[in-house]
Length: 412
Image (cartoon, rainbow, N blue to C red; front, side, top):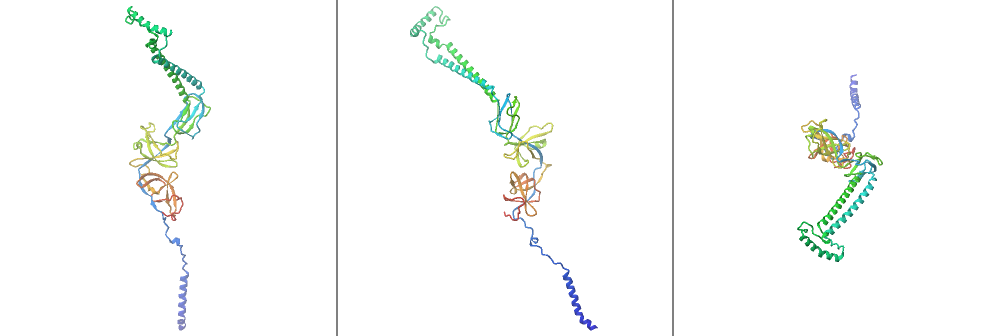
């Protein structure tokens, strides 16, 4: 019995060992090998990146305002009449000096022609009076009425007559006027003065006729409304065929190429501004820098605010009547964006007129963000909206980079 047990012991041990090995091998699950992409680290973009860092900027208050044209004029009727011409409709441009509106002038035409006829007659009379005066002063002597014989007799008799008169006490020494022959009478002071007076009367009559013509010209000009500068028709208050009275508005003109943002600022904020300062301005589709062009000298008594006009840059996408925001600096803090995100100038691109930057997303793609820019300091620009501190942006975006493009395939 014992010998049988000893003989079967190796077999039993081998079976037990085999069962343990099988149990150990069967209890382990097969290990799946992860894909190579999962074991590899996240591919970082190979383009240059810049981190959005905190940047101190002036504390600014946000004030709403209205865009208005710097040059605005309302053309009104100066005389009663019927509208016969209008230059166009709202939105049409007119050149400087162009006729924008005109009234009928049928009633003035006969009066105008009569004034020209009167001026022509006065000019002829003035020319004749001038010729007569010249004749009296410098012209040849007129022939005597009796011919050469009478002229010889007059020349001989007149001196003896004057001598006899002086002997008798009636000559020049006696107070009487000497006798003159016809040649002397032609250049006598009285004759010359009469000719000069007639010439001056005709000259005055010609000036009066010219004045009547000038008055008619003015009345004719008042029947036409002229554009004082190149502008756009903003509004029409009448139509062709309407009868208007003096003072009635006809057309509103404005120059859309020179625009201002008008804001009403509290007095304490206005004291921190001066003409020539730069203000960040936010319009509906643009963020631009405007220049303070005018600060009213006094505050409004009801609202206690000061009117400030900031000149918008030329070519800005704006129109009169649009709403805008002006960010006015307030030293000492208390306003918005005292600490703002800052990015390099090179990271800013423009899509149309809007500044933008491409943020590096977690999946390695570029996401475009529209920005509202603030002040710049050196190479960095403050971003008032659009970015958060700690984000990363593409430092040198390519011109054809679009939102959603993978940055891992790009090269600087």
